[in-house]
Length: 300
Image (cartoon, rainbow, N blue to C red; front, side):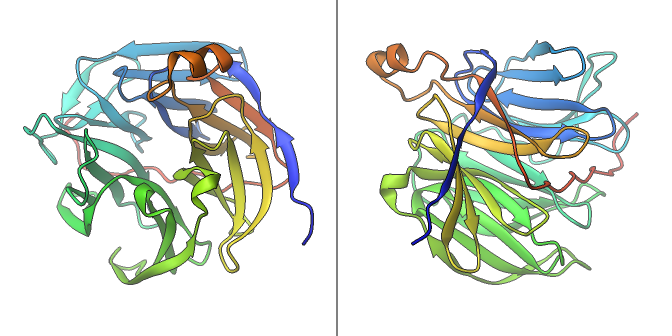
């Protein structure tokens, strides 16, 4: 067996996030956005200045995504909202409204045909109480994958024919046939299983070679996987046990940004890994795929 290439990520910003998650690289703005779900914070990192900015809210934010109009789409605990970065105005969209205090959103992505995909989950991780939703540009919603537990990593193959998906407690990566015309999924199956000692699979990104980069909760790292064989190709070590997600950024899309969490760690673990909850960075040799923007009919 060949030796797995191993590198180490560097701390970029010691944010002390409770549950840092969902980094996205806005290639038009050349800015990074990410959230602290349990800390109810939205973060912005400007690599040209090294400056970090944050906004606090009164409810959890499961994900933040870039919209075509320059605003961010926020999956707030009580439903989707549009956030204007200039005026700092938050506009509730009355979409996927949630009144159950035990349910929140977790991880979202915009797919090849512009639909927004977002998962729900139980705050105490009750099995199969969540769903993966699809939201169209007309803000019509439908359940794409029912009875999920912790919706996490999502990625689409470069030919737009396959959708990769992680429901973390299953320790597996699923694959679905993806219809780029209508955005529907079919023929879901387990693509490969992840050894439990590797840490639970969390957020995920995909590179231009259709290899999957998976953050491992409890695994201190991000691993690059070959989805065809289930083989680990590369490992990026992180000085934090709970690694939550990753994305490609920078002008060349070769800068990997990695989020982490303090949530779920003991006092002893936090003393040993004080950078937990920080934003980490690593320069890769492969290029990531750019995000797609959510084009929707929202109130101006």
